[in-house]
Image 1 (cartoon, rainbow, N blue to C red):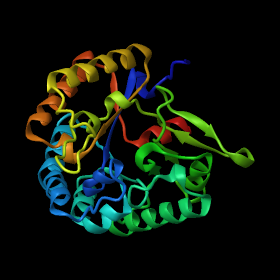
Image 2 (spheres, one colour; image 1 turned 180 degrees about the vertical axis):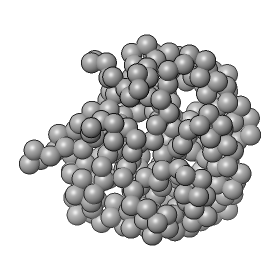
Image 3 (cartoon, one colour; image 1 turned 60 degrees about the vertical axis):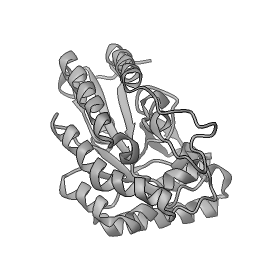
Image 4 (cartoon, rainbow, N blue to C red; image 1 turned 180 degrees about the horizontal axis):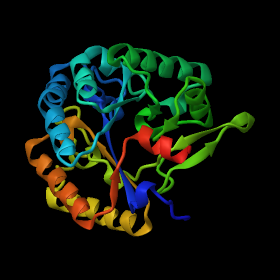
Length: 274
């Protein structure tokens, strides 16, 4: 892996992202779930009303901004959360419309879903999102070509590298991909719902200490390689009061090592396209 020369001589990049899935988290496990049932709306509302401000406070305390990938359905049903992000100066990206599995859809259906999500997010936020993240991480090659066609500048969807790179598309075009690592995604560690069971098999909530250790060890390697650390958080899980201490500890760990560039997706894109 060729080491990237980050701006101003910094050692590595840190991109803090939010998956603003709200009630849609249930569809990742049960595609036919009625997400308007109270069992799903209560944790979603708690995450957006209480958890989101906690996360933003922790991020802003280290002088950083998040890149929040918002499904169109969530923008329509929770506009106040999107407006909070905008008012506090964070970046808004798009995450499809309603947790579609784009990998199982034909090109026309994919474009319809992504465009519908993009329009909803843009209407509520007043911003045209530059970044795209596919719901569920399920895609086809056409997904990226559609994202490019709709005006997205970059994607953060794949988990196939530690540094941003240009993904080749048809007709000689490309799109910047800012990949992530699954161990840096909080929801698989912490999501829990009794019935229907999430996760399947009803595994219990992970130890905060062990997850924090995972995140620190991943950072150690990213730091050594001068790569890009992409953290994925969902307010429904990461916004829990005790988990905010995990973020505080993680950011303190990063700052003590020194040399990190906290960047949004658009800032990474601007740097990579100079």
